[in-house]
Structure formats: structure tokens, C-alpha cells
View 1 (cartoon, helix red, strand yellow):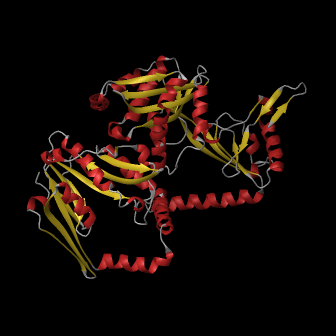
View 2 (view 1 turned 60 degrees about the horizontal axis):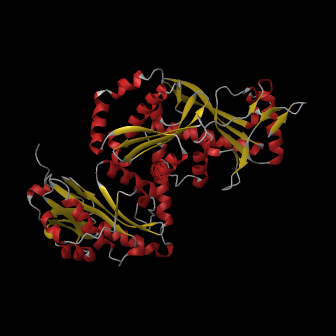
View 3 (view 1 turned 90 degrees about the vertical axis):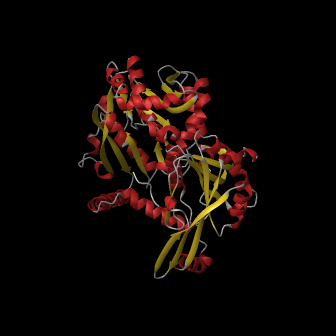
Length: 522
């Protein structure tokens, strides 16, 4: 949308687009545009947007438009209730965190604090920790795929967003923009050769905006994102940047902010019905949040439960529903299970082949996970648990093919307490034990020997862990194929944990020694 004066000079501009995915009217750039607003001469700030919306309503009847986020200095007289568009808009304010950088002394001091020094020292075990500034397209292109994978992993695990929309165009845009001075500000945080965090933001005149911020889950317990932000703030101060715009959204940003101003979410409706529906829904949502808050139940918890139910239904074959229900009831009310525990001496691993078929701690493979069976976790929950496992220093071994994760299993370097959920008991191990656990093979790949190929590779890696004296694995007694593989490799049976379920209750017992059934005394 354009406006010109009598001499043809530009007096107003409002850039919009139609989404290829669903036909929605969106601000040009969509989620890539952190602040979404029209530009005009000061005297036309309100009149220009009213005229533009009048034309859009004629062109897109029944549609709506959302501006996220509208800057604090945008002219807003036109949304007053007595103005024509005031009864077709909903304006919601949000806190906007900003960080004054000064001379950077505050960030240097923070990095010298005991907690941050400890984190840096642990990261230095991987190699020299350094902040690297990227200034060319070639430098950014060399790490872009890794940044993209880290971002996709976090988005899928914690925000249920599968991938960036039109990732190829986003890559091309950033590689082109970085060639123009003071357009893109990109930095990496490395420990040795390992990329542990990255940030790619844009300049807004004298400010830099927080943009793509990612960090590796392999070292997340050392707070690489926090360390990167502190080092980045120090670097921006050296470069003479006065303010780091942390952008709205995300509670962690408030902890870094030195001050706040206000931005807005603006919803505009081109018909009365759409506006009234939105207002009704908004009132219901706000009331629901208040009720959930009184009951101490988070809205995210409700969403999770709803999503889990939908996921279960999506993977249920309703023609077999009666059989499935009967089988589940029988297993819960009338079943006897045995978890068999096996052990291998690390020295016995030497004679085994080491096929190196699986990839270790590969986020690209984890992103290929699909819920293949109804009992499995939804993708975001699977990825959250994988992130937690990696953060705790565990390692996941994966095999993916054709964009689908077909097999995975975990190596826990040091485990002294193992929860055996299948039989409702806990097994206790000596602290110098490694554990192989939580294996799964997609039904499409069963019979291909993936379990048999992954175990030797994991055993060789377990043996290489300094101080490992024994390697454990558990398997249900009725899983005869897995038991055959385990025993053929040379694992020795040690003891079992049992559970017998009846309608009157459950009985649990074990033939394990007392040390394996009771937590060690402090």
C-alpha cells in the first residue's frame, strides 16, 4: 500500500503479503519481521493507516490482519473507540525488554562471578572458549546448517514448531544481508572446535536486535546461552552499540533487561463478525487462565494433555479398539512381568566387532522421530526428554533412513539408580557402572538387525569411559529376540525384578541381592 503527495513523493508505505500456506493476510516477512508497522510522514501517521485499511477491507472482505509487534512510538489515535476502526481492532500491550550496554564493564564483571567462571572452566575442558564474529557470507554459510538444526531441535521440543517456514529463502536472505555492513550481527561461541552457541541478529539503526539464538543441548547444563549473551553484550559495547534490543517474549529476557518500554499486539478485523468472535474467544481464554491460575494448573499442562489424547486417538485403529482396550485392561489388571538384568565385563568387549553403523548424539536424526505406535511419546515430548538426557551427559545412538528415525538407544555413562517402570521397581548399581537402555526399533525396520548392530558400537564406547568396571542392560523376559541378541553378545544374566498384577493389587519382588534392591546409605 502506497501514498504519494501531489508531486509524486512517497508519504506512506504499508508492506503486506498473502501466506502461501493458508492464504492469510500477513505483514511482509511474517515472523522474520520482529516489528510490524507502516511508515508515513508524521502528519499522516493516523490518516494513512485508516485509508490503507479501508482499501484492504474492500480487497479482502472477511479477512483479518495481525501486527506482531507494533512499536511503542507508532501512532495509535486511530484505534480509539470513537474512531471508525476503533471498533474493529484489539490492541494488547506487552513489556519490551531492553539492555543498555554502556562500556561493557557490567558484563565483564558478571563473567568473573564464581558461578560463571565455574561454567566457563567446565566448558574449557572441551578446548579454548572464544567468541567468534562472523562478517562474510562464506563464514555464515559454513555454520548455517548447524545453526538451523539447533534451532529446529529447540523449536520442535519446546514450541511444537517443526521447521522454519521456507528455510531455503531465510538462508539466502541472511547470507545476502550479511554482505552489507551494519545489517547483520552474527557471532558464535566455541569450545575448542565445538559450536556451543550462536546468535544471528539484525541492526536497527544504532541498536542490535536479539534474533536467532541457539545453543547445544550437549552442554546446556553449563548455560552456554547465558554465557553467549554476556559475551555478546560485552562485544557490542566494544563496537559502540548503545542498546541491545532483547525483543518481546520469553521470561529469560527479563533477567537481562536493564529497562522496559511497551509494544503491542494489534489484531485488525475486516468484518464485524470476526471481531466479535475474537472478543468472545479472548474473554473466554482470559477467564480460563484465571480459573486455571486459581487451581494452580498451567495452560501448557492443559495443552499437553489435550495433545496427548489427540495423539493417542490418531494412532488408534478403531476397528481394533475393543481388542486394544481388552488387551490393555488385561495387562494392567492381570499380568506377570519379569525384568532380567544382564552384565558384561568391559574386557569382554574387546572380542566384539565395532560396526559404527549408528550416529551418536545426532540432532538431525532425532528430528526425524515420528510417533509410530500409539503408546509412544508425541514428538515434542520425545525431544524434550532427549534434550534432558543429553544435558545430563548421556548419549543417544540413532539410525535414520529416508527422513525417518528407525532405531535408537541410550548409553548412560554413570547410573546408580535405574527406574524399571515396566515392573514398578528401582534397581541400584555401583557408581562405576555404565548402562545401555531404552532401545526402540520402528516396526518398518524390524528384522534388519539394527539392535544387533547398535549394541557392539555402544559397548565399545562404554568400555572407553574412564573407570567403567561393568556394563548393564535390562530386558523383559518375554522379549525373546532381544534376549537372544544380548546373550549371544556375551552378556551374563545376574538377577530379575518381578511384578504380578491382579484386580486386588500388585505384588513385586526380586531375586537380586540386597545391594541392588535398596538405595545405598549416605
